[in-house]
Length: 345
Length: 207
Image 1 (cartoon, one colour):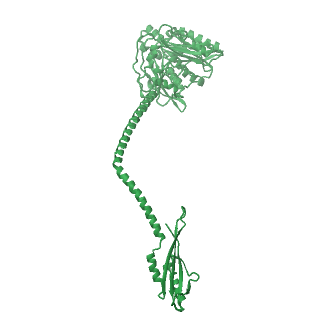
Image 2 (cartoon, rainbow over the protein chains, first blue to last red):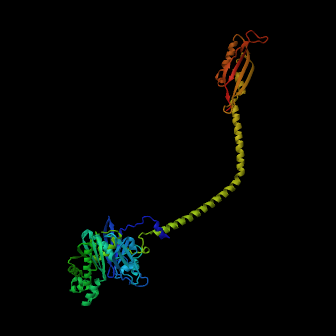
Image 3 (cartoon, rainbow over the protein chains, first blue to last red):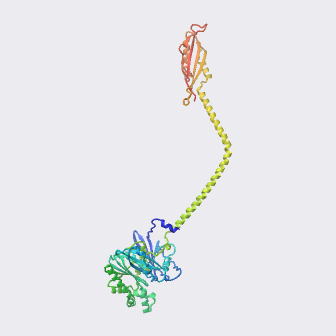
């Protein structure tokens, strides 16, 4: 009865000014706290928290996560939780017709999530580039994982107000930075995850393409581990230090991905009649040197690592020590916070 | 451009307010219900108290009723007595105290004047619903005197009646035409005179 009373209350629009973005990962959980200080989104704190193992997509039963207890500096008022699992599906759809037509779409089929597991599906209609067609960004998350993520935070502050998928969250942050720093030319954002890598193409600050590739940093870790017999935990450090020549392994591992990247670039350039001038990388960039080198070789464009924490004013002592050198992994956390604060590019 | 696809269900959302709206509504409902109950209890209590007070007042009234009736009777009789007293006062104010007045007249008569008759009359007039009645007195003195200075004697009498001892009461003292004449009685001397003095008193209101 009480919840039905809410509908009679006028103008119940929340203003989110103190938001914690939580990107739940299987290697680490990235947490940022963003506050609206005098109309400007300001990074108040960023830290890495322990990793979580999300339940399988087809797991039965009620899975409850260990509550994520945040340190005081990260305890904002509201929280936006974002997850990224191999089962998460994201598609950028071009739908002919009006908005009413979009509502009639069979999203499970379009998202390719008809494998039997229950999915939680959401979509957003983007501004159409051409008349008579709608651009729709749609996503599906296994219900088990969505329920798990929604119950991640204990009672009290911060209060969860948004559940997003990392691939989409990062777009908000990138869109915010893109028009300010790189202008309106064509750009590709490569979000490297543990098992999935997302490629997003932008033109004039708008999303023009989104692809998911089932290749992540885990492929490289596995290749190095198998070739050199090194424990998986040690691989990231060895790759960064350059103690071994992993170039060949990385090239072999990401070669299918590079082909898709080239195709993505061609698609954006053909569809938007533009040139892709920037390629930016973020995520779990194990052996980023190798990624950059191979992408540059494949595309003939310099690939730079994008630091999502550098686009916001940073409060003193906001970055924890463990964050330094891993800033590019916070794209989804920052983007999730900015998205609910409605700060975009 | 914001890319925000929120997959959180409404039932999974939590408010950041220390007192969420639904809790506030619940508290409000409880407070309203509580207030109604308290108000009802207070009304019932107040009504009972009023009934008790009314019963006490009725009992007290039963005790006081004879005294009250006696008081009413006394008040009625007091009003009557006051009316009578007022009338008496008005009459008293409108009358001349003839006992004192005769003593004064006696004192005012010169030795060589013999008062043979004193007549007093009164006229009550002007008694209407709006005008207070007034009483007017007239006093006629008839007497004799003699000698060469008979007129002086009468003049002295008139002067004495005009002194302040009388003037605050008497409006006029006159000798009417033919009021000073020779004494017609048998055996009277040539110089003997009879006189007639009319005294008019000031009108006195019955108030």
